[in-house]
Image 1 (cartoon, rainbow, N blue to C red):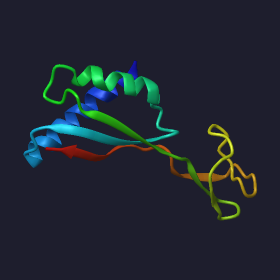
Image 2: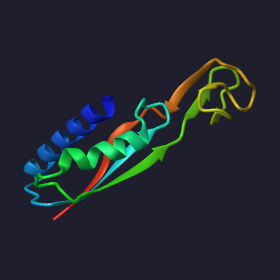
Image 3: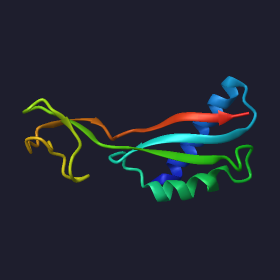
Image 4: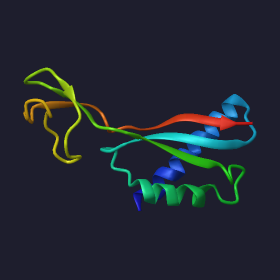
Length: 114
């Protein structure tokens, strides 16, 4: 399950940030997760508490912000969202010549600490 390794890597990043900022307790972490990130939201939500269990981060809340797919059409120049998650075409002119502007995200948006 690759979500377990992602949760472990996320926790390591959180620990580094907290050490650098001299924060003692993590209350919550907000993660931006795009529809094309390759991360299964439910599986990640299940793995995160398991990774922090028994550690100094135990009890922290995981918040996930979903990042919608945004496309730029190379044909008509318009920005749009696809009608279907796995049908990456312009919703204005139906061209498949598009550039993905957003939706691949998997980043820490914020930490709430004490």
